[in-house]
Length: 325
View 1 (spheres, rainbow, N blue to C red):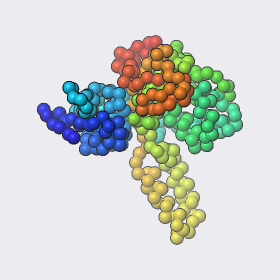
View 2: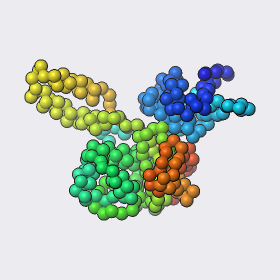
View 3: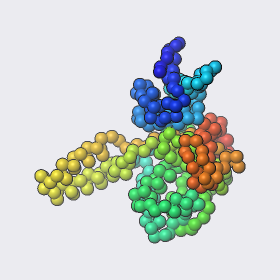
View 4: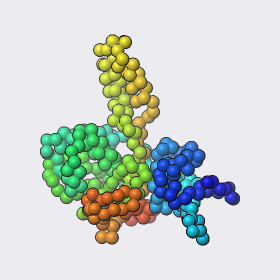
C-alpha cells in the first residue's frame, strides 16, 4: 500500500511481507527507474539489492515503524531512499574500467591463483585454508580471487581520489601458509579489505588477527572476464578463428553473432561502493556455528559488524589515514 501526504511517498508493508525479499522487490518496483537514475551508476536490479540491505538494518533512517499499533507496518520513505543514494552510495562509489592497470594486474593474478593452488605452491591464509576444505574448480577459484581482491583496487582509487593518498597493493603469491597479513603493504595496522558482490549483504567481515576491517560492495558484470577479452579484441579474434573453421549452415555458427553482440553490447565497468571501516573488538567476534540475521550459520570464527555501524565520514577516513597508514 502506498500513501502520500506532503509530497512524501511512503510504502507500507506488513512484517510478513517485509521479511520476504521478493515482496520488498515488488514493492520498490514502481520507484526503481528514479532510484537508478539518481544513483548515476547502478542498474535497477543493483540499486534494488543495495536498498534492501539498507532496509534490513535501517541505514539512512529510510525505514520506520507505525506507532501505537498492535501489528505495526514497516514504513519505507522513498524520498529518504533518494537522499540515502545521493549521500551514502554515489559519493563513495568508484568506477573501475577495463583499461585500469590494476584491473589488468588483477586479471592475471586471478588466473595465476588456481594454477598455484593446483600445484600446492600458494600462501593460504586461515580463511583461504577453510574455504579450501571444499573442492573448487579453476573458474570458481578465479572468480573468488577476483571478487575478493577487487575491493582493494576500489579502495586504492577511493583514497587517491578523495584524500590524495596513494597506497600500493600486494601482487605477490607467497608459497608460505601464514596468518592473514595486511591488505595494505607497510601499513601501521593490519587492515582487512573485504569485498562482496552480494549487494543485499549487511555484514562487514574481517579475520581474527585484523586490527581494522574495511567493507566494499561491488557490482560486477556476470560475464566480466568475457568483457575484458572483448575490450582487448581477443574475443573477436577467437570468434573469427571459429567462424573460419565452420560451415555456414553449422548450427553453432548461428551462435557466433549472438555471443559477439552480447559481449560487446555494453562497456565493461565495475562499480564499487566503499561503505566504511571499523576497529575490530571482542564484541564483534562471531563464533563458528553461530546463527546471525540475514546470513544464517557462521562457518568460521571472525569479526562481523552490520555496515550501518561503520565509520564513514570524511573525518573518519582522515583518522584512518593517520592511524593506519
